[in-house]
Length: 303
Image (cartoon, rainbow, N blue to C red; front, side, top):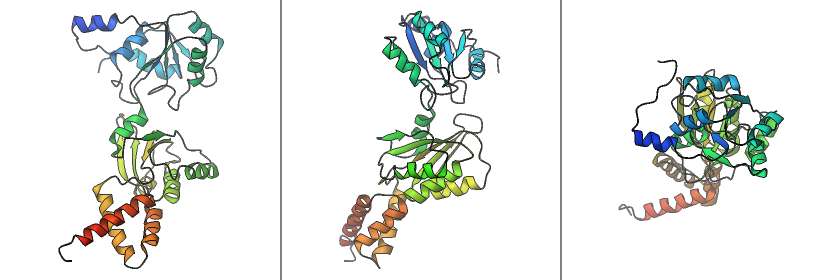
């Protein structure tokens, strides 16, 4: 592996288009790799190379990336404690192209930067996105859960009482939910989710795009048990099915089987409530499956 990166050969026409896009002065919010160092766009490399200055959450961490791509641009610390420091504001007011990066992924997504971006907007300094790697979006893309609606909720509160209250407010959210969590709290968080929401489908992505990347899918109880038997390390992205999501033929078959079992000894209303409470699937969705089950029974050739 070379010490610095030499990009592949591109046609002179394409390079001309890249180098002559006439980028406007302002702040460029640049996504950087979340693990694999090659997960960065050519435009991001170009902006970082031509910028007058790069504002970085951790200059030591960012310098590893910049050195790999042989980028010599000056780097100024810009973290949650100094986003609006005099050096940062004076630099931006002097004009030119500036870049904002975080330790990994897309800045402002559970990272510092929103105060700086807000200040730029209020002071008529244009802000431009340079899209790229983002752990929550990467996790959603491989989770196998519905993607038509999803909501990113960051880190749950670390303290138990606050975490339970926070998760309780999300019980009826129908969209797929995405969280970040630390290895020390992942098992506890999965157990709380199971207790409050029922045993929903879930996907956990650990160390995305890194050497020891691990993607596990299953119910909350299964994944909680899996990680309780290990010493979890790394960065965790947790994707959980929303309320009422029936997301696979396997799950649908399980619901039919539970309905047949419960309806032998309970009323429809009681059966729907019990299955909804235990599965995390909405009563409306369970009731719909009960109607489908009745229709299937009515159409059975044994009738």
